[in-house]
Image (cartoon, rainbow, N blue to C red; front, side):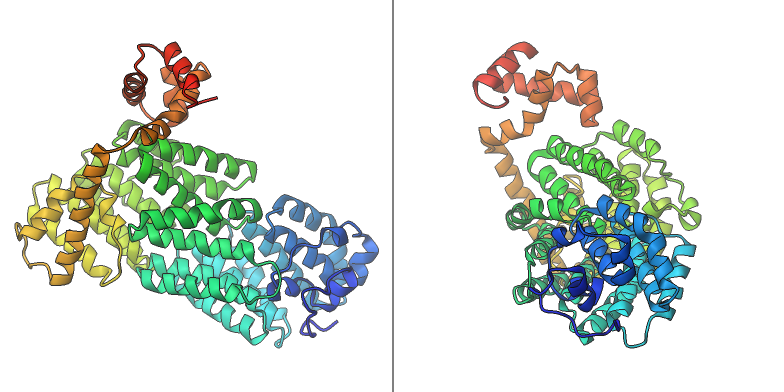
Length: 538
């Protein structure tokens, strides 16, 4: 079978022979097809010999559907037989490498130089007219570049993969890459571009043959992240709620899962504060452990660090920083091989912690090389966030003019893009700097009309948030403290609760005091009984 043979229609897949005739794994990049489980049950050595690309197709589809452990086990079981068959077909060897890397992407594995070189060798062995295979190779290069934090290389490979997929009429494969393009554009500060890509992607998926609901849900998760950054919180909640369960159940894609859990955590923090964020993170971290996704777990720890720091739980944050092995030494940034430091979110979290722990001068020393890295990697949004944190550090050191200059520089970087949360998330202390810039105090160059409008929108948000906090109803309070009540009902001590929630015992005492006042009780036992009577906990 020629690798560029015509592909079957979406409803023709019913056997290994039909999958083989449809291009094997290529079929699942042309159509939004579900993994044919009944066909997979009949896999034998004879099947591998006769229809090797169909076997690779089954494995490929299993990984895409979230059954990554089953897919890897199946691949390992039949790898020798597949490689033996590839001795007669050099192109097949390259396809085996492509599917192996595909599994590694879904397994959240770290790619080393040997793996990258093997991918290059495989691509050089592919037939020149096998456009879908060349597209998948570029697809993998995009994934690797994203893992390394190199957005320039990621965008280049994503665009090349999309072009090749489209030339081969593999629309479903091309639309997959739109998720990466949207993520890259957002991290590069092009929020409007990201929103446009995702809107177009969701519309196009409606016309793709097969079952595209889960990929539409992926687009919705990323749209929720875009909405969050614009401070359209209610819109973000609606999109997230409609898509999250489908993405979590049906997808093992690292880049999408981290986006989903990041949005979940930040929306929970915006609505319920630290307890809400920690509850969301506890769920996400358990999924990462269950699926054996160490990089996902590590970046979730960075989200935990962010939530703790923004809540001024600095002792717990410093302890966590040490536990996950990150350093605040700016000299280590350039030579560090830690993939966490390739992510702009990590650089921002570390800089913020330094400011919150009264190490403003150290923060500025860290931010300098961190900004250089963000610039070289095309991480414009992280660069803007670093400058907002630098503004806070300057303010703490009494350098008021430098503070307002850093803030206005951050806004100028993002141009007319409707970002808001990158300022709002830094908390009430930023109000003084924003107000100073609006009033023209400590300002070397007055803000432009557009900058004043952006700053006024941020101040308006804080003013309205204050009113909403005062008018918060009982339901919000119940949701905020439900996790604490559940832990009380299980008999946990204050120390145990602090460990589970990742906060200090003083914070636990504070929340318990609020709960006792809310329930009109004076001890833990009565609080649990009252909460059960009111239906707050089971």
